[in-house]
Image 1 (cartoon, rainbow, N blue to C red):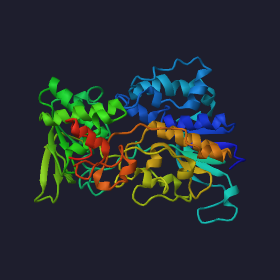
Image 2 (image 1 turned 45 degrees about the vertical axis):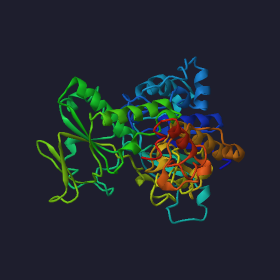
Image 3 (image 1 turned 90 degrees about the horizontal axis):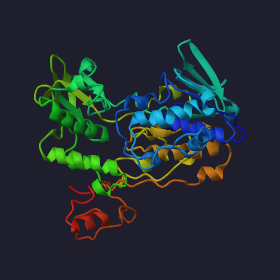
Image 4 (image 1 turned 135 degrees about the horizontal axis):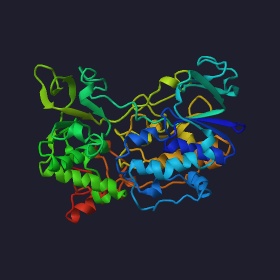
Amino acid sequence: MSEAKTVAIIGAGPVGLAAAAHVLERGLTPIVLEAGSQIGHAVRQWGHVQMFSPWEYNVDRAAARLLSSTGWNSPEPDQYPAGAELVERYLEPLATKTALASHIETSSRVTDISRVGFDKLKTRGREAAPFEIRYQNGQGPKSVRADAVIDASGTWHSPNPAGANGLRAIGETQAAEQIAYGMPDVLGRDRARYAGKTVAVLGAGHSAIGTLTDLATLATEEPETKPVWLLRGNDPAKAFGGGANDKLAARGALGAAFAALVAAGRIQVESEFRVSHLTNGPRLTVGAGSACCGRQVVADELVVATGFRPDLDFVRELRIQLDPAIECPVALAPLIDPNEHSCGTVRPHGARELAQPEPGFYFAGMKSYGRAPTFLMLTGYEQVRSIAADIAGDHRAAARVELVLPETGVCNRSAAPDASNCCGGPALSDVDACCAADANARQQGKTGRGCAS
């Protein structure tokens, strides 16, 4: 790839634009294709959400260098932006006032990627053939060629369904008008939809607890509002996070505030509730188990916050190797697998872990995580820094680690981690704690780091 000249970047979100900045800084030509009508289209959908990470973690260094020549007024590093602020104060200036402006095409949805003259089966000479990227921009099909491709298209528009088995629940399609996916703006744009209603929220991640927290706030103003938490697992405390031990204070505070709401009975909790079917009508019946004999919750609205999955359809003609469970690059899987990953903190990684058998093609950003949760924007920035260096032939820079990530303060006992590398080392054998930091917290009369129930 040392002779690569043109790099196609799919997605003009934070990571896609950072990729373009690094590519441009390397003397290469970026071509950014954004499916939405504006840059940062997905971020705009959750513009009402305050981010867990402060500005210092949300601005890419190459992007900042580009912006500095425009007289950009950088935000205070310790302030926490909402999604809309991220767009207005960072992404928009980056996309419109820097050299990137002439390299971005919006309303350009990528439909297919292949090698010029080569289908997936053909090998000899494949590496020398440029990529052909086809896209739709409202004027019919278009195509562009590139020497390398970075897919930073994200996963926001392909949410997981309600069904506990990974499939749509029976009746989910028919009940679509009473279902929202992701994190609706309960206190703002979508207030009228949820005020005074019984709203079931399915999921145990930050989107779910953020929505439930907003619904509890709405209930103080509209007393008929009733939030119901549908939890597939049996331990609500696992969703509360690391509290004060979380190095991202806002993330820890959200979990602690949510735990207080649950303890106060302001949120109805239905644990071990694995949705299997939905029946729509004037009200929505959410069922778990068999239709005749299982449990049911009746609600006016359902919010499905069960995570996301990558759209892999347009890369079907490329030679892609993914972990069979997580649908992420194989080398990345052990670092982010929620079944095994013990401390909630992923070590920095780059081109080496993200490269595919198709030379010159890389996943980056949230899409690189496949179905795994807890992606941090800063992780994506390090990914594309390394990828751009790799494409430019600077393999030493590609292999170098230039990032330290904040810890979550959470360990997972069931994963049987190597305690010597987790949360301060192992706990004493006669202490009911998963690690030293958990044990120390308990000795001080605290509830610990979320490691044990």
